[in-house]
Length: 434
Image 1: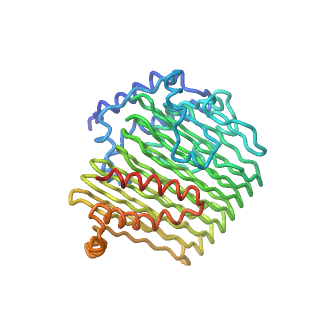
Image 2 (image 1 turned 90 degrees about the horizontal axis):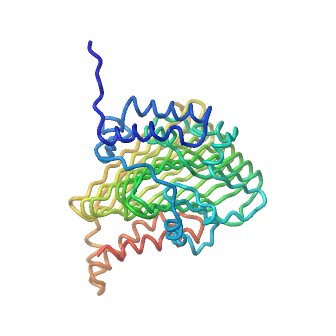
Image 3 (image 1 turned 180 degrees about the vertical axis):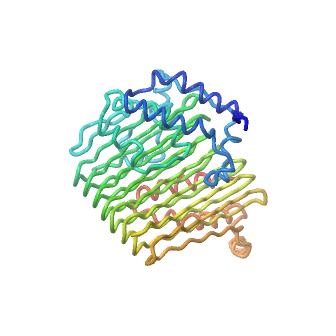
């Protein structure tokens, strides 16, 4: 049988050319270079994922990524100046800002003042110096053959390395502010290690011009540690975000993501309950309209016993927008007494909007409590009529019902400051709905 030569799209050819051109200049040699080459070979063997790949069934990246933008150049002084006031969504909380412009960490726009038990450094510097601890951990938080993660590994430029020492309680939230100033592509990789008994609040926001962003965060939550993680995506273009999380014994984590005013977004989370008696919650809200496309895909692995997980995502869709939720709970043998539940709900404001929900369970233990559910529907006309009969105009009546719908999820955020900031951002979207 003759060899089959895969036909590469212009975007796939451009990505391959970019890697060939950049491989000598990307940070890191030795083990890091080998890691890049292995990752690129995975991409080269399959190309961009299509709907034939089950995990990407509803987000055909090969079709969506018609052209690959060139790799972003280091930001100039003007770009840095424009990014000075970015990250306003959480500004009221006075977090410790760590700013990235076009994928590059910018120390002069970041708060690097010392704090006991906290260390912050550039990922590019760690890779260049051959930081053995960083190299050993990269890709080990959650091993996956996902192509977006593989591309991130192959082309990762900068990012941040954060270590929170054992039993440290950070005084302020850490806010990773990502700003795109040029229509280019960037690949950032960050590693956050929260050691035994430590507590940290981490936020991440994305804003700027329509760029192509591939970002990955590896988050290691140590035994007895607690982490709250919030993410807001509000920029056009294509955003591929990967969270790889591992929770130790008696650990706790809560995550929340808000997507609004975007182009194509895929937030994918790979989470492992690796230690007994750990608890975690993952929540999110999509506010989409026009032809926006948001995909939240989760893979939750229960490896240890007596762990509890909660996942709750909601979407409000207008125009011809599309929301995707794929969530898979996997309970490995030995993960007895697992308690895990997943729920997704979609509110369609238009006949042309589309919501695809696919929750799954894969259970290999016999003493567990697991469940999932999914719903999709329109605004209740009776409730809307009731509000309008009280003198509220139609637009305001719809806004109140939408606010109540997403409020059920936003109200689950334990931190009052972040809860208010995220609801304020959501209400701003409602005000511009028209």
